[in-house]
Amino acid sequence: MKNPSITARAAEIQDSIRNILFEDWDPIGVREDARRDEYDTYIGGVYRILAGSRSEHDWIRFLSIVEVTAMGLNPQPSEGLHSVTQKLLQLNIELHGHD
Image 1 (cartoon, rainbow, N blue to C red):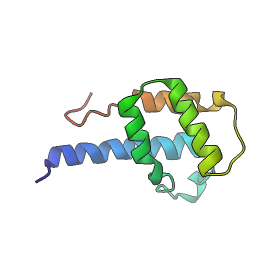
Image 2 (image 1 turned 30 degrees about the vertical axis):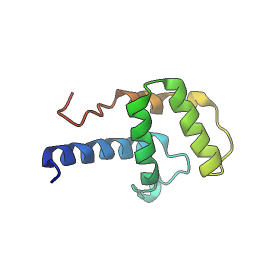
Image 3 (image 1 turned 90 degrees about the vertical axis):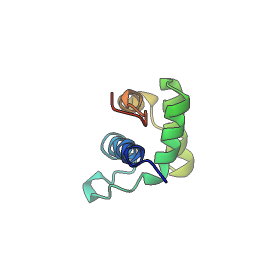
Image 4 (image 1 turned 180 degrees about the horizontal axis):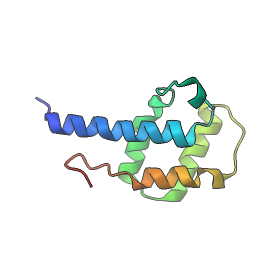
């Protein structure tokens, strides 16, 4: 049986990642269409990288690769990803407790 507090905490973490991807990253511009789940396929990968790397360089590289290879977008200057990576790196991804 799953621990309800861990399940709730995992949902909070997913929502935090979803919000950053939707509000701050949004490389294909769906924010105006209110499709909040557009980037949900990346939440698991984002969480795994957060759990394994706290490097801003790794984050910029990951987001750039997703934009170019998965979304077919033209490469963008990495400076534009700085604020997104900082917000992701500030997330508390611990399953046991907050802050």
